[in-house]
Each structure stands twice: as C-alpha cells, then as structure tokens.
Image 1 (cartoon, protein in one colour):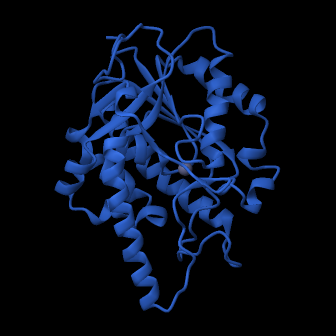
Image 2 (tube, helix red, strand yellow):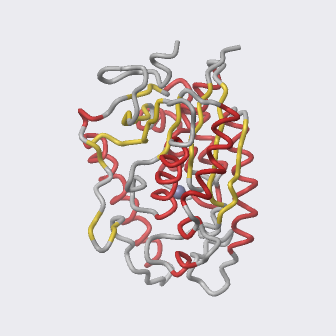
Length: 287
Ligand SMILES: [Zn+2]
C-alpha cells in the first residue's frame, strides 16, 4: 500500500472520464488512492430520449438520476476508491436561464462550496489535486466554478498539494478540432435527413468570443502516457451512454481510440516539490 492519494474536482458526471479517465485507472493500478469530487448532478444534460434542456418535456431530475447511475459505473470501471457528490444543480452553459437557479453551482457561494471541499481534502490529504483552469477549460460556468472553489479550498488547508489543470496542447487541439468539425457535419447531415433544423452550436464562447481551449505546448507540465489503460477509459466514457453514447470517441475502434487518446496533459499550477519542466508522472516528486 502506498500513502499516495490523487483527488480531482470535476463539474459533471462524465468529466472524470473525458479528461482524467486514463490517469484514474493508471493510478489505481499503481496502488494510489483515488478520490473523485463531482460538483453537480448534471441536470442540464440530454434527456434519455436525447432532448436538450431547453425542450419543454426535458426532465432535469430524471437526467440527474440516469447520470448518477452512469457515474457509479464509470467510477467502478476506473477503480476510483471514493466518490463524493457535492450535489449542486447543473448551471447549464453560460447565459442559459439555469444560471439563475439559486441551487445551481454557479449561484452557490464560493466560500460555502470551498469549505465543504476543504473538509474532503483534509480527510484525504491528497498530494496531487486536479481541476480545470480559470476558464473552466471551455467556458462552462460549472467548470469555472470548480476552479474557483478548488483554489479557495486549497487556501483553507494546512499544507500545499501539487495542483494540476487539465489541458490540451495546441498541436493536439488542431487535430481534435478537425475531428469535431467532421462530427458536426455528420450530425447536421443526420438532422437534415430527419428534417430537423437546429442552430449550429458553434465553438464554445464567452460573451460571443470563441474560447481557445488549447495550451501552448511549452506550458504543459505533465504528459501522462495512458495507452495501457485506454480500454478502461473507453469503457468509462461508454458508461455515460446518455450523454456521450453518440460521441466521436465511441465511434472509434478501440485501436483508434488508443492511438488518439493515449496521452492526458496537465499544466502544473502549484509546485511544492520544485519540479522542473514536463514530467511523465503526476506523482513526480512524491515517489
Ligand atoms: Zn462538464
């Protein structure tokens, strides 16, 4: 048994699989204790029949119930030792009416949520903590709030863990962008065939400004090779069938998925161990 603990603070059920599915499984296999804090229940996800949250019959509570079970399955697949659900309501994308729900994560006081998170951090005392950057990686209010709450919680601790933000290097983002555009075209064609006219979602934006989700390659502080566990990452993504069953990830064969998704990248934000340059192990400096 090692005394190493990893804790990630994620916004919605499924985020743990998309950005940290590989490192969770890898660290579990290495005997590291792994903890997942999921801030919201994901009420603004797709209804089981595919309806979007602005549809009249969209039932957020039903969506949350489905996603809770999906998250349990993903946690099992990834070998996560402890799941903590903070239980806030999903705030939806920036500008959605759900932003104003007093029970949503975006409307929650940072101090209140941070004190709850700090309680978990003080129980677990993880050496390594992961969340998203100040822009929530892509501008989603719940992801931005996860950043604010995590940074506020870390200030309440009596020690300093190494904090990482997930990231995609610009060089890789260019390849992914091409894939997404391809996927958007495919969806638009499918919708057109069914006679559905839907506004194109376009790139994620804040105040009309598209968000650049890439990070300069030289700023990447950790690149983790997860090729040995991409099957588990694939299965964890597949567990979230109601949200990403139709995603480009799961359209890949497992071999294609391994080739495309075999690395997870992070930016190092705090550095109590004085690490230099890009490491290949999130626990570099601790073992
Ligand atoms: Zn999310």
